[in-house]
Image (cartoon, rainbow, N blue to C red):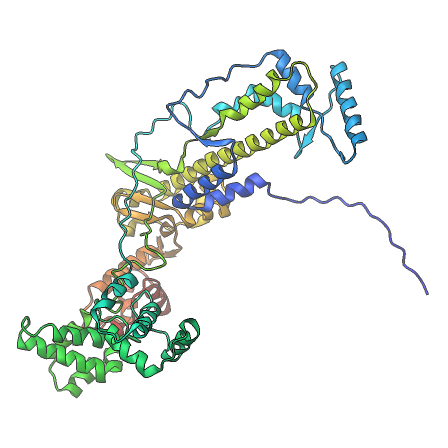
Length: 541
């Protein structure tokens, strides 16, 4: 039996790895402005060496240069690290090595911490005062007023329903608990989609209340009379019927006989011919109801006035505050010259805390010729780590600003005609590679900038991703953007005769007449991307 021996081999490999600073930059680059504020606040809480700067403060106060003795002290005293300090003998040996370093000025021992020599760091610390290390320069002029958007606090939809609970007649506390269970089961759209059998089990296990489906349905019918009309419905059909019955009941002395008749016809359509109505088989509806097109149109208009989501006008339980889009860039037209600026929230006032510099000075002044202890050296290392981390974060914020401006500047140049006129037909074909070639950045970096950023223009706030599109050739051989074709397609559908909507084949023929030779399936794809229904569902009376 032969044995195969093991052997050691030495190989050399070249690998590309991202540093922690690069990873931090990529994460900062892809977040929008609103999230950036939260990320900065987290860093401020985690790193005491980083602080929010005050542009009006004297940032150079107390930043006088250290003399040669101080530099020599920090270059030597701070460069001894206790390694393998599990025993007292090891500590004594390191202390002796440190004393030898004092005796021989030509011999220095470097303390490695994360691959950075402490003496070199302290020399850099003296030459580059951290007190002046900040995200904004001295000549920064912030003319833009910081404005905060007030958020209106109001009762949620479910709180509004609970307030109305006292208006109905309930026999006891038990029925009140059942009504509260029903209200709590209504979703944020206003629908009661939870099965009644499941609600019976919920009441039994959570509140020890024995009930049945009939009792829950009886109380549910009372809840369905709450405002807004249509709440508590179990499907769209029931929701529309509730609203129509409420409208008919509350219109006794308000509307005319003809309007009441239209509401009654609408109730009959939803109650008996709901499937035909959803498929817009108006000819079949008119024949079965014995109505002409005009009377049917009046009834259908009554249905179209209803709200398919009765709770849409209320704040939900999960999201009371309104989410606003904060633009990352601003583009202004100054007499034909486009001016690009970065949102001030992307340039926060951050700087190094002066107290950490003062700690080192206090450490030196209190030495009195004594050799630093192990704890004092650990203090220097702790200060170094925190200041380095703060510098890395400030550098990442600066680089984020530069990368964003560089990318947006290239997009602005590429889509110059659009930003001047606001005409979507003037948007040129543009892909990520075009901007990457123009800026010298990687495609993934451009993607991170474009994916979640917004720009404020004279024509509204736009998402950067909207400016990217593929190209196709028209009959003249010119490359045009797919966005241009979609805009023309939208205009054609907007101007069509709603009684006879244009089919995809007809839309293809009209686009061909305008010089765009695309297939019918491509027309269907663009129409679906624009959230436009097929011709049959666009039909109106």
